[in-house]
Length: 239
Image (cartoon, rainbow, N blue to C red; front, side, top):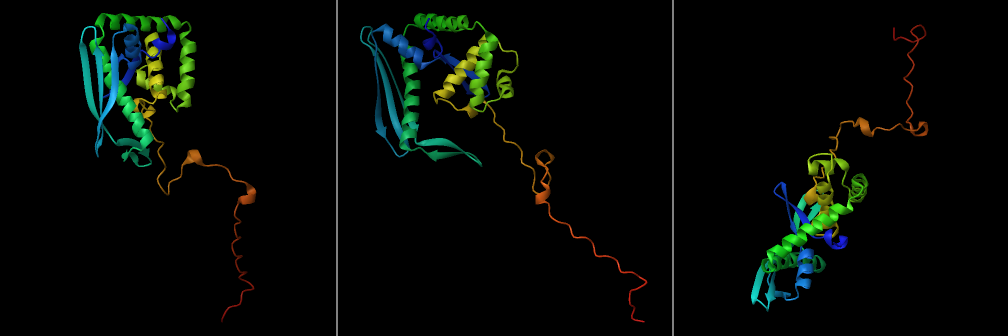
């Protein structure tokens, strides 16, 4: 019933043209803390030339249930350039961010594999109910989201295209809140959700009427007057 937890309880990630939603690692950690029987840890198993192998383990000593997951975190990250997105070697700070993000994903899966499903379902439903009850002014919430997304360079048209319509419902507002939190936390980027098309530049030699501006008279280049035609009556002839 706490809004601060409810807002982070679900995620929405773009995959293959669709959105995958589910319970987040924030909810998994909160449930694990109140469940009071779980121990978990993240360790670095091995460092290789390709990347870092990490392992996450969860153990319930009361029921003796456990879960473990390993993954190779590669040392490559995507970087946007003028020529497109390329893969580059991650520096130490970026590598740490990628490891923490991947470890959180593994921990989420391990915790939910041990926590009672009924508890997860009930708490997840309560989080959604809490968020919906907080939406007392849908239009006001929509305007606030538009302002927040606008700071990230996301336009109204881009948001409407993402949702597939321009009439936002309470569920749409909740989904966009989840998207905004995911972007602000650095788990995904703006480009992962929205297509940011570059403005087409005019071809060399072609005039772009939309970019033409009036100049000042002081900057105008002078035009030489054409040479006066000779008076036929006074012009000298060779004969």
